[in-house]
Length: 217
Figure 1 (cartoon, one colour):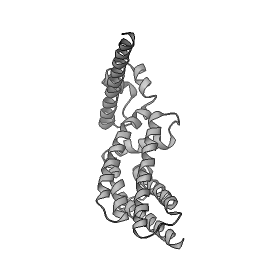
Figure 2 (cartoon, rainbow, N blue to C red):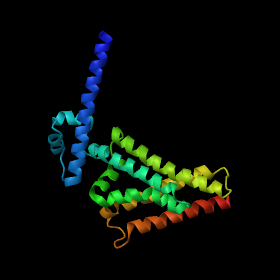
Figure 3 (tube, rainbow, N blue to C red):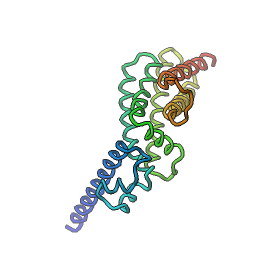
């Protein structure tokens, strides 16, 4: 009976924690969407979630971590959409571009938040839980790209030793180009250029280089 009572207590506590986390997530998502990252404070988020500010910081240590929590879900959804689109593509370029295009579409809705998210991913605290989750999603995107390139290389009869390593590097290069495209509004670089068209051309160059290097080896 004692063990059962403890189990019920733990379950209730877990439900309360989950409820608070859901309220914080919903409040942060709404505030960032309405006012942007810079125009939102943690106090506003805690007020909207109807919890104390001290309680808020038990779930996320900073406003940047709250943004990571929210935008990790945006990134996860975009990756799922991109993977579904890529499966319907028959060549490497359109498949890889299909993987990253949903991320660009999401970024266009609120560039300020996307730029802040990318900044937190690259330069946030190494102890942030949600930063680790975001970096894992980036690694997943790179792996998706690499796996597709490996499959396409083998379909061409190329199955040499360095295929997987070269594909891994190509995946990292694509994300590097994607990152620059996502933060372009803040850098002011290449004014007048279509970021999506430029990114597609860059991906084409990376993939061409991938297959050319394999051919030489």
